[in-house]
Amino acid sequence: MASAYLVACWNCLGEFDALGAVWCSDDLENPTKLCPFCLHCFCDSSAAYKQQFWRHAPPPLVEELQNSALRSRGVNRPTDTKGGGEATAIYWRQCNPDSVLDYLLALGARKRASDVSLEPQPEHVAVRYRIDGFAFRVDPVPKSFEASLERALFAMFGLDPARRGRPQTGRTTARLGEDDFDLVIQTVPGTQGVGATIRLVNRATFIKDFATLGLELEDRVGLVEEIRSGLGLILVTSPACNGAGTTAYSIMSFLAQGQHDVLSIEAPVQWTMDGVRQIEVETGPQGTEIEETLRARVALRPDVLMLSAVPDYGTAVVAAHLASSLLVVGQATAASAARGLVALRELGVPPQLLASSLGLVLGQRLVRTICRICQAPAEPPSAQTLAAHGIDRDEGLALSFFRGKGCPSCNTIGYRGRRAVFEALPASPAVRSALEHGRTAKEIEEAAIDSGTITIRERALGLVRTGVTTFDEFARLRL
Image (tube, rainbow, N blue to C red; front, side, top):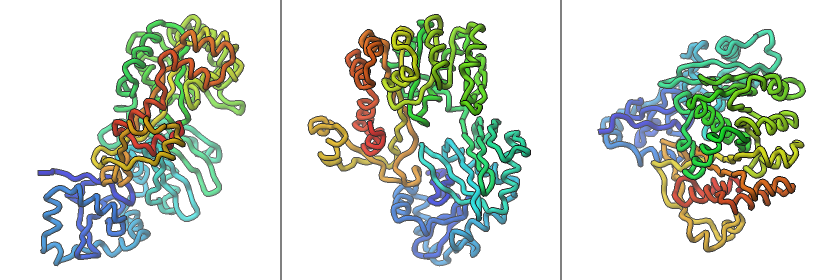
């Protein structure tokens, strides 16, 4: 017998046990459940949400629904919760102002949010959770709670109230639910008040081994071989917010466990790690001061140097020179591994120096994965749509297509979670030659493919074929 039926509220995204939740019924023929977080029932939810809720409901809940006594008595929702505004009002009237921040963070953790954004508005404080790369708005915080919420933010993160008119960064740790989190805040003053974005880093899941990251076997072997060589440049590239930082920290963890002397220069430090000398670099009017810090610390002679960014010519040239005698792991924002190399070259790094110091470039993207509970076959796209994405008829016939129909587990979205898709571009003779001769990113990528590289595009198509992700997600990445 089912002991719990966890569903996501259609309104606030809060996850609750529908078996134990209170019944609510405006329509006596169609009772629904009341969310304990926002006090909304799902009477006003979409037909698709209701259909999916009951499709996956366990037998005890269905039997309870069919109970004639329940239908006859009609368990009405509280009079104060009629309508969205009143539903929110009763919750906030019962809420301790000092606990609002704890509630918002705990709910964000339950929903696997990577960020919690607080945006003061004329009548309320808007709240958004970023889940699997997409922002979702939840019930706002009343304006009367704004001052208490701001005080709690400044106290939790040790921010300076006297500097509330300027952006500030802070960090702390907290236990949310069953897990410990690192929390990093960035405040942004605005005309309506101080806005903030809080990043939630789950300490139990942030650091991953190379297989869990999503690296295929041949790419893992290539990466470990480069690490064991003890010198050369390993570049981790991705567009913004596509997981390059997680990959870099996972490489750092691998190195620290191997008893390497690791020096990491970061702007800012997102994760503190035992066994690594981490230096946080301030961001000033002229940008980060990574080059200055790098030159000052090079005398420490670490085994491995890690850079959270390679933002300018000076940093790139120093890193390339150091890569001839030690292992350098850097991050760059680029749409592909080949474009990451071209970006370094365009900073002014001499092509011969870059080619000689290069060890490996990892390119990556994050794709949303189909919810396993509601996964189902999907209609194939038209031949014209496939052709627009560079897929010919024969390749299209070899593909299988799936989608998530939407269910309470995934909040009717059809996706739950993300995974990384990688390409590993080695420093083969063909790639070094293309770099030295100033070839384009496309030409460098073609040289890498001739050397055995499997591109992100091919790997993503493989995930479509095996039902891990959808063709729509592949198309969204514009590979």
